View (cartoon, rainbow, N blue to C red):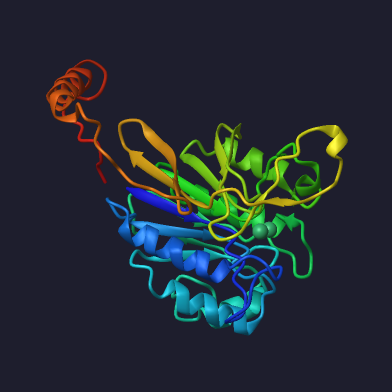
Length: 299
Ligand SMILES: [Fe+2]
Ligand SMILES: [Fe+2]
């Protein structure tokens, strides 16, 4: 199964620029085309919050229109820039989502080889996130209902510290309690987060937790030194989608696929001479290191 993650779309109203500078709507359109053209095409796409920049009905209208061009099914959760009720109203046609007025926009998706659990970490009007006892109880019960199915949790605020102090200041409350729950559920093979606008991986709660680059926005500048304090800024680094390829033989592998910047596959001049050698070596490696019957991609 191939899962794609897009995050921090920060869609604005029709004809506008994010921060008066960044064409986030056009960038999301590029990301949608990029996902549609990937070979193999992802089985599903997860959008991990900050779907819009201000959480207005007009922005959700623009988001809905752009995402309608996406060929794989997309599963959405809100981020701190979103408005939960307006989001749920705008996407009432997404049957997996709770109805507008629901206290949280979390849910489980059961129809794939990997179980997908979307967590709502948002607090209306706040930049930081929260996993209150009610949400943690829902997560524990949801995970306990399928102990032996490989599971991916996706959420906006990462439950770990990043080392970038100003984004940690608007991080997640309740992450330690979540870690204890996840540690009791080894079927959780990956946790995919947004909010940071950068790719990060960490061993956490007995699994691997990640954040992904923003698909449509400038990335958060990398400021790891203490002297950088709480200064914040964005850098015009490449935009990307995160891919999670799961093979039953070895679990998840993640890849970044860049949306912005030139991308072309070209053969080297000696490609034809080397091709047979590559194939022979690959088959030899499969016989000795991998399950010999394992294709490179299985459901
Ligand atoms: Fe964001
Ligand atoms: Fe965020």
